[in-house]
Length: 245
Image (cartoon, rainbow, N blue to C red; front, side, top):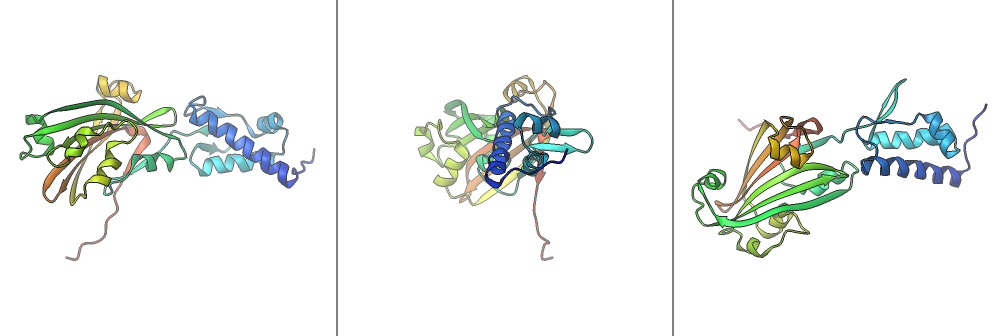
């Protein structure tokens, strides 16, 4: 049988339909990481189109990082791979959307309280007044992307006490409120405890990547945040240049 490509408009319409159908099933979680996508000949039969159109759609999905094409084995849903640029302070929404996945933010808890010894270890010994403790979860598609555990020094950012943080995550809100002058990052590996495992949908003891960041404004501590990511879906990227010495 000789395949004949569809006419221009029909091919474009079928290509977009196949692309959208597969992407929606991946993003919704219906097709989980590792799921084998129907073979090209199966999709050709299902959509009544040429293999050229199916191949074009699968190639675009692979380019977007949503699927992995293995020779002689077929195409499989990829686990989203994130690269965390630790020398930058950026919005997690941008990181998620760069993966081609829909972003969702969720405030899990918000408590105003006085700083304790453990808080001073995180924010700095000079902090002694009121703090805002926040726990948030960021989602990529149907799956948790990372958990954010943040302390805000209300002496440095008193406006935070009245902010609900329901629609806007604290990170981008702070960037818009306070110009930071210095930042410190700590990166480590950790095993998920019971609470973290439940928050991220992992098994207890699963490896996690933890990135902690402390920022200052004019030498005054502003915030300390701890981001916990599933380790098997994230990588750390640091870009630097040679020193003058």
